[in-house]
Length: 519
Image (cartoon, rainbow, N blue to C red):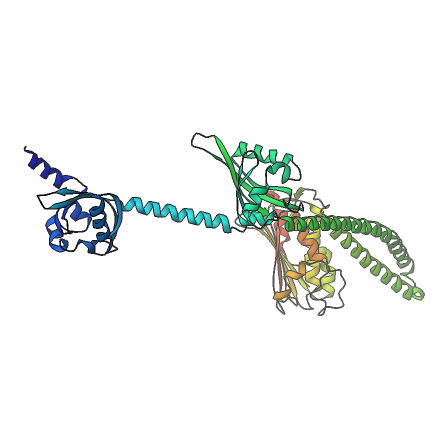
């Protein structure tokens, strides 16, 4: 192979663009690599299109003339970067090198190479953009941002950190701070704790400390998030992090703590007062109820003492109502203070429903109210506090009787749901509750139906106590009601409280209770 053929093969096969131009800038020859780079099908196509006007390939048409002038002065180009435009409008960046060569006695040509550096330029632009964005975030962040040496010297800070420390500019802060541990933290050991955590975990999160505003020495509270920066060999270099002024939040927390203490003290005083007063009130009430019962017994068979007997009965009834009100207030006080506990045993819900229905049956008959009971034959035993569950059922039945007009009816149902939960439902055909008041019925001392049934006694604690007792059993209570159409109260106890069903022979007594109580 002769040298001329070798040069031709190299010219056509390399992936670097090669060109030759006359001294006046006219393209004399290009290789295919350059043609393809510039968006042409072949070298011939490129020469045919732009041989006389290669300046149009540059994004800045004057760039071609500047490069030719430089060659005229120096005789060469070295890695000159230019933005180019292909015929289809797409752009690329090139690095161009060239030198002048004699082609005859009075003629010189420019021979050059072109490399596509678009990817490099774009990555550099992206890096600059990222650096500008990072710098903007650093300088304009609302939280203080810093870079400190391992020994506690301030290396970098933003305006927000300067303001936190009482300075007008980051430069003032950086110049003023020499040792953060001594000059910044109220407790100098706090810096050592910070460093130990970062050394162990690589970073700290929500590191709260009391510090001095560096310039004014005013005490404030901050929260830091920071990390340890290491070099390529893993050697610690510096800390970088953010600082948030949480002085106001700390003030709120302190006020909240003081308020909580005052509330707890007040609640304890209230509980102690109610316990003491309930004891003091129940003692004479027991005497009043006992003597009124005695008077009733002594006068029941004599006509001349008929009025006395009637008055004694009224005294006993009134004292009993007052006794129950005191019991409700004391019971709610224990529940509210969190002192109430449940004594868990196996509980037969069917027995409780039957017992409670019997207890309210007389009052229901007087009010011409029918009560029916529907207990599922496979109703399981439940794990709970017998006395508390009886209190729940009795409260719900008492409420249903209280707010059901004469001629109405009450239905009590109990069954196990598909998910294993035990569900008790008490439904009545009473006056109902407006939708806006349903949630309020669980508030203590609230009686939303008082206007309709103003003659009814009570403290308004019944449902509040019920909900607390049900929650003690990890259950829930739901109310569905419409004014004038009645109310349905549903108590659901979780499946975990259901005890495996007894054998069929042991359940016959329960299923026999499903007969309704007639008016």
